[in-house]
Image (cartoon, rainbow, N blue to C red; front, side, top):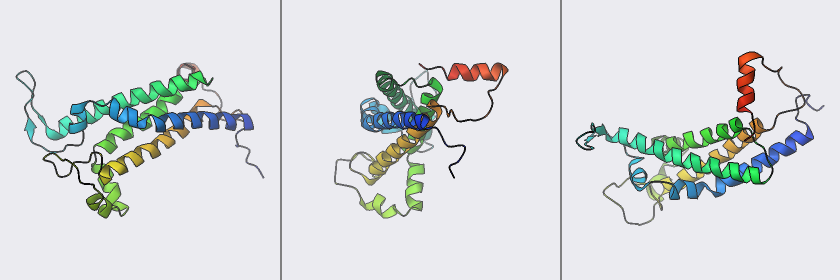
Length: 208
């Protein structure tokens, strides 16, 4: 017996369309937003950890290596997210999808927030170890020019490959979230909220 909470065919089709477009944009433009929109200094500092103080000039207080790394990762995540949101908005709009701003931002926040965490590397390394990929991390690296850091994780390393795979998988999840929030289920649901909460929700759901 079909569930009474199942979405209507039209709703499902719309969600599939939004998901397909958003997922394609997030996936295909991931390398561009991740690499081309990233500053050189951020690409170097974003994965650094340590409590050594780094002087920054006569008028700026010294920060630890970890603090500089977090700031670099945050800046990179912001430029990455901005590129993804702009591209998704343009493509969705050009194809006739009127997606609520809140829905698009929800997917972008998932995508961008996790991007910063992954690029800090330690969580990614811990997940790899817990899933039995330690050997891949230590041995899956091609010979290339390295700086003084033997743990560098740029192109050609196993950590870089796990990074890219993780970002793409999260992009798919973010696309699902966007599609779910963008297309309302017309078969039922909770009653509309009244007062201020209702007005705020209406404003957030207004199509761009």
